[in-house]
Length: 495
Image (cartoon, rainbow, N blue to C red; front, side, top):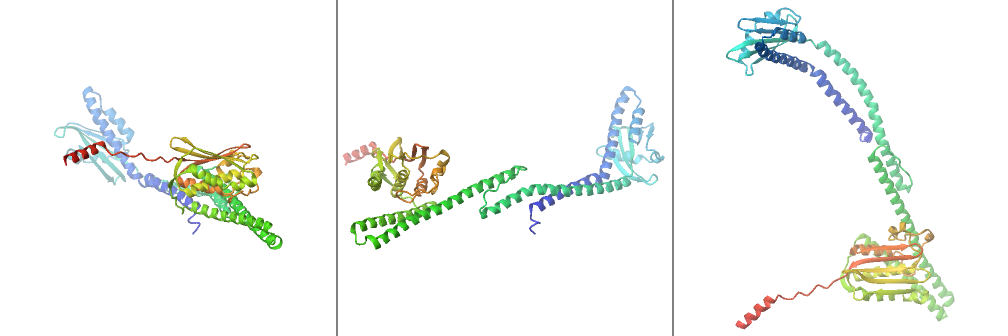
């Protein structure tokens, strides 16, 4: 059953069906309908000869030219019996090559029938038993119906075509068998040529679940097959890329989970074995445990937030707030890095920039962008934060670091989780604060808000991450119409 539903079988069947239909069409029109066409052609020859004689009658009568020569040529050319009868004359030309049966035939009934017909022509077909042949006859008159000048009677034999048809049928059968045999091989050739690329593409597609993404398909026969192969290869590359990202994600998340757990365990054992009786060391070790616990909790929360954002189950609770005021609070969360690592965060913000957005989620965006810059900052340990009005009604937020920078070919992928941005960063770099998947959260939050975002970077000089949003404008107060006030005053005066 699978073979019967295959493309190869269906192409072969349809090819054969088309050829059979063409052969049947040829048989019907060239053999089965040949007698009818033959009769129609003979009738047409008689009608054409009759029209020529009628036209010549008028010309020859006017010029005195002898009509007999014209009639003789027509009869000889078409092998006809032609008889012209007037009131005082009866002449005929016989090139049928048979007996005198046509001359002896009573023509009066034909003349009467011609006068009675609507178009002035009487046509008849009958069997001549003496000659064992079929005869086509046609009779018409010259002049008016009430006063005919002459009558034209023409007859012609229909040659026996039975033996000829038998030869044609045998020849047609022989040719049809040859054509069908050739069709079988040709259709199988084209079916294989069409289906073999599809079979190869299908074989390649079956390798994808096994993790084999490097197979190439080189088919140049048909545009559609080439497009399908190119699409599948593009899909294979994307799947391979996604598979690599999945492996990296699992490895990096495992690293980020394992590191705080290892440190928590190690410092807990140190408290138990070494610093339990030393308050100063115990407090220091407990602080490390608390910091790593916070880091672990932040990672879990960020993963949950990202999953919710990508699933589209989180809602945006918009409200109007002053982003300029909020920045100081977000930056203050990095004070610990200023003390411990000497990180410098410069803030340049225009005052009074209002925005309509989800406060919690937008603060998370700002925090993640600053944390990303802190993680990849350069030797100067400086991060520059800017908030300004780019155009009337449009604000722009930027975070700039002076780190290694990002090559242009990597920029479209930096918003993916744990994407490696350079060859020198093959090893996952642990974020100084947060989880390390902040840019993915930034992307999803800004897209939910409908804000434009991006990154500009120069290798060796640093990077700038930014987003733009409409600045909220207070609607103008609407003053009551003066006309209504005037009407109210008039009504009070009347009272």
